Structure formats: C-alpha cells, structure tokens
Length: 640
Image 1 (cartoon, one colour):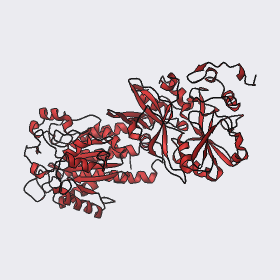
Image 2: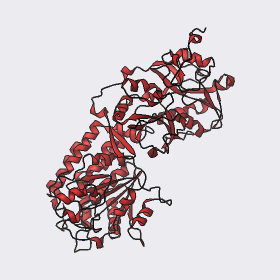
Image 3: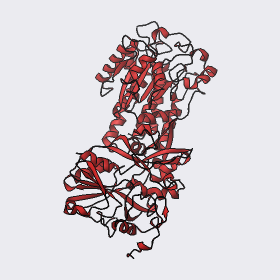
Image 4: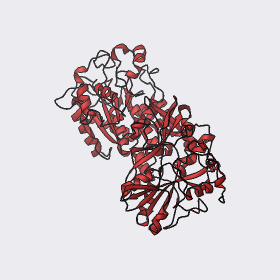
C-alpha cells in the first residue's frame, strides 16, 4: 500500500472518475497520476474545492513572449504560477509536486504540430531543463461556487466534461503567439444566468465572468452539440448556452507559434493544486451598483444577451426617460418601448461596422427639401462610433448625397469631427430602391454575409401601409424619396444584424414596431404610420435627442468595466485614461450641438415644421429648450 493509501481505494466510478477522487486530497490524486495509472477522463469534479490549472510548457527563448501574451489575454490565460527555467515544482500552489508527471496526460508538439500524447514527460530528460511551465487558472475551479449557489452543472449531472469550442474571437497577438480564443460552455437555466455571471464575476484568477451569453453563431460556433474539445452537454428546455474563457487557448497559442518542442495538458485533464478555492475571498451579495452585473436580453430567437453594471443600466434608463419628452404635443405617450435605448446601445457596442441613414424631405419650396432634425443626431452617433473604433457609414438617398458630403467636409474643416464621415448613396447610381438592390448593398458577393452589424435609421421617412411616404400633415413626398425601408427589410433576414429606428412622430423607419398604437393615438396615424419595424425603437421628443441619448449610452457602456470586459471578450486591454478622455471628447456638448445646427443651416437645412432657416428644430428653439435638454442629459454622465 502506498503512503497515501491509494491501493485501498475502490474503483467505483462517479460521473467519469473514481469515487474516491471527488473529495481526495490533491496530493493523493497527483501521486495517482505520477504512478502512471490510466486516466483519460476530465478532472471536473475531482478534488472538489481546489484550484485546477491548465499547463503550457515552452522553451525559455519564447517564455517571456508567452507571459506577455497571457497578460494581454487575461480572460483565457490567467497565470496562477509561472516557474523558473527548469523548475518542475510549484511551491506557491502545491507541495511535493512534479509537473513532468502530475497530470493525467500530456500533449507533445513539434514545430507547431501535435505529435503524440504521453503519460509523463520523464523520457524527454534534459530537454525540459530549459523550459518554463505556465500554470493557467481553470474554470473547473469555480464549479463548487456555482453548485453552492444552487446553479446546476449539466456536465456533472450527465457524467461528462464541459463542452469546449474554438471561436472567431481574436486574441491580442504578441510576438509569435497569434490565435483565436477557446471557450468552455455550460448550459445554465435562463433564470439563473445573471446569478451565474455574478458568482464568477469576481473570480478573475480562474477566468472570471462569462464572455458571451446565448447565440453561439455570434462567436463562430456552428453547432453547440459538436464541441472541439470535451463532451456534448445536453440542454434542458429552459437552458441557455453560457460561454466562459478557457485555458485551452494556450494550446491554440502553441499551434500558432510553431516552436520546435512544446508541451501542454490534454484538454479536460488538469493539474490539481493544493490551493483551496477560498470562496470567502470572493464578494457575494454585491451591493455596489458599479460592480453589480445586470444581464440584458438583446434578442429572443436565437437568444442573445449582453451585460453592464446596474449603475450604467440605470443611467441609460434615465437618458431614455429624459428624451421621451413631448414638447411638440405629438401624442407620443404610448409609443415608448421601455429599455430599447439600452438594448440598442448594448447591441451596437458589439458591432464592428454600423450603417446610419437619415433624411426627411418635408420642407418644400426650396432647393433643399430636407429638414434639420435627425442630422445632428446621426452625426453625433457617427462621431462616438469613430472614437470607439467602430466603422461607421452614413447612407443617404441621391437627393441628399452631395449635401451630406459637403456637410461632412465642413465638419472636418471646422474641427467638429476628427476624421471625415464616410457618406454613401443608396440606391447606388443606375439602380432603384428594391429588395434586390438593398441585398446587394448590404452584403458581400455571396448575398448572405453582411457588411454591417447594425443599421440605424434616425428621422428617416418610412413607407406607410399604402407604400407611400407621408409627412406628419399627411402630405405625400414619395416623389422625393428613394425608400431605405428595403435596407431594413433585408437586414431583418440577415444573420447577426441588429436594427434601430429613432423617431418622434410615427412616420419614420422603425415606428412599425408600434404601428397599431400610432394608428390609434397619433393624429392622421392611419395614413402616416410607417409599417417598417426595427429590432429596437427609440422614441424621443426630437429625433436629435434620441441620437444624442444613444451616443451617450455608447459612451457610458465603453467606460463601464463590466461591459467593457464582456464587449472585448476578456482579451486585450481596458481603455486607458487617455482613451476615456478621447471618448468623452466625442460626446455631444451644448456648444457642439449649436455649431452642428449652424453648419446645417449654412448648407440650407431648415426647420421641418416652420420651414424657416433658423436655430430651431421642429419649431423648438435651440436656446432654452434644446440646450437645456442636452444639459440635463450631460448631468447623468460621470463628470469629465
């Protein structure tokens, strides 16, 4: 019998491993592996309550680059211990440990190709004396915390490993290490997703909070029941796929670097340390609203969610209420869709490319029939997106195209933008507005892959139920319009594309989401109501106000640490102090709003109701009304 008494242990199996392992001291399990016993199962559930770690062993010549790579991608690769060159023990996390033999199995790589699996590394002799071992935190370590919070783990219930997937999430490259993130997936009951997020949120040493919730396709996973590593996990009817960063990313990093020789653990078979997961060191029942995560559903089919702090969520809700003000007495009281500002901003924050369309030709009797409302809002959204490094394009019809190009040039020359806003025309020359031309405009050559992740219509005239475009006074202006409704109809059919409408009267693109209410409550509603719906609808007293609120919401999310980490999928770095200052500079101010309106006035844009060339929007004077609203909105933001 060994000193640990292992020969006395029975071989009864529980959930893929021997029963004695569940509550055994880690040293006993390490010695079991060290003695060469066959073990090809996952170590999930083994030595409950102790920290487990992924392993990457690299030659000293590239170890410093890998350490920097881990620092730059701390979600998937949180280092819990890094050895010295040739050090096989890990005294900070375990006693009587030899990394060459204390794992169930090892993978061996030659020139970036996996060549074999072995039970130990002892046959490599002196070759490993020049290697550095990286012990990277593993999500198995937080399983006990989830269980104690009454969150079921399907993998343990089903006696299998967690499902692990390669994704389309690019890690922050360092030197020769350049790969995509790997994630683990746990089916979690929908009503417990926010709780699971909160439990793991403080546990950054073992991957921390989830980096994606819901729709697997959004992160490049085609079938959630066909994992790249681990086992399929069966879902219950109310389960949602929740994804955490995974240390198997280290294997992908080794493959990308192609070192002459390297070693890793086999996915699922972890190094088990002597470090108890002291759950008391992680805060529970968080009350600080700046550190309390809130999970917000963005879409239902397929389900997808995003996350922000309670404090940030509440601020964005305040913005929504502020702009839902009806000084023009347009009977908007029933047209609010609660939380759509929040959902729109969250969805847009995950975008890489955004299309914004605007333009309502309702001012007849001049060379420029387009009203001024919506344009400042569109420009403001575009400006913050540029600051956030999200590609943005303003898309307008033929009648507005040259004017908007001139406005974009004037804004740059006047210092109101740091780079010229790109402007495109839809429909393209020699084509007409229709479903076919809209699909060509929105997609790459395959007709399926979208060029834009999010489409925004702000004060953009939309088709009524008769297919025509009407002003608030029910005047038909269809002869001046190349309908952009088709863009939003096509977008609704494209995968992973969100849409937002911003309106203030009922006849704008997006208002189809509350079509019946417009017909019932808005004067002439039956005639003017736009039939085109969007995923999210921001209803405001002025469309500009809706645009200002959306831009501020995007700013608030980017400086929210909880959302920032989720948005960048726990890879790369949070914004610096200088970054945050740049974001804040892009936020609208009273002075900027006044200069924008003056610029538009110089280019012939007029008040949409009075038809006057003045610093008014829908007859509301800038001084005393519009500027006061902006001040109220700015008061919600953190002090600059």
